[in-house]
Amino acid sequence: MIGAPPLEGQLSRQVGLDQGKYRLLLRLVLVLVLVLSGRLFWLQIVQGERNRVRAQENSVRVAPSQPIRGQMLDRHGEVLASSHLVHKLYVWPKQAVDPNWRHLRQRLSTLLDVPEEELEKRRANARPGDYRIPLTDRLTPAQTIKLLEQVDELEGAEVGVDYLRAYPHGTMAAHALGYTSPITDEELYHLAGQGYRIQDRIGRTGLEAAYE
Image (cartoon, rainbow, N blue to C red; front, side, top):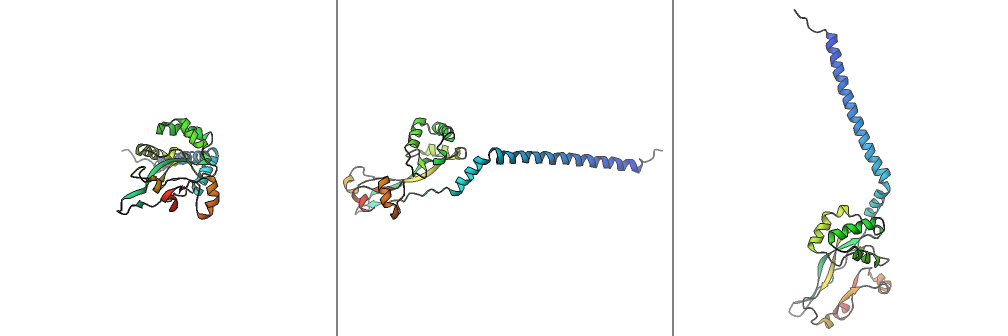
């Protein structure tokens, strides 16, 4: 008759299994700590300055919205002048410097099918007080979608909205309706106290100027 294994042997094997599980768990915890430490080192030391700049910009970034000019109607209620929404591409001034700007310009040129020289010209023509630099007059729907899909990878660039003046009847009665254009530095100097801001557009002649 074969006897049962000694109790000491069973306990010894059980203790051995428990110690093996403990060592495996300890190794997993150690690997996890090393991975997290490495990631923390990368974020705080290697990418620390870049992340601090981005966090600061995100926390204080303010982009005033353009005021919407009202419609002009004739006595029959027909629209003579109105404002319509367009999408534009902007870049923040702090990001429009090398080496970031060089890489961003290449990406935007490829996405928009616009020559890099044109984007560079827009950046170079920015006014000193611009809170953001417009790189396009307007975006097509296809361009807008492309940019919005990859906006997280386009550091310093963003898609914004603007309102442009439209005259359904073209040049008819243009002398009476007038037109609008961006405010000049000299005009801004005198009108800033009335709430005008850089990149605002003001009425120049005709009714547009009268209703300013």
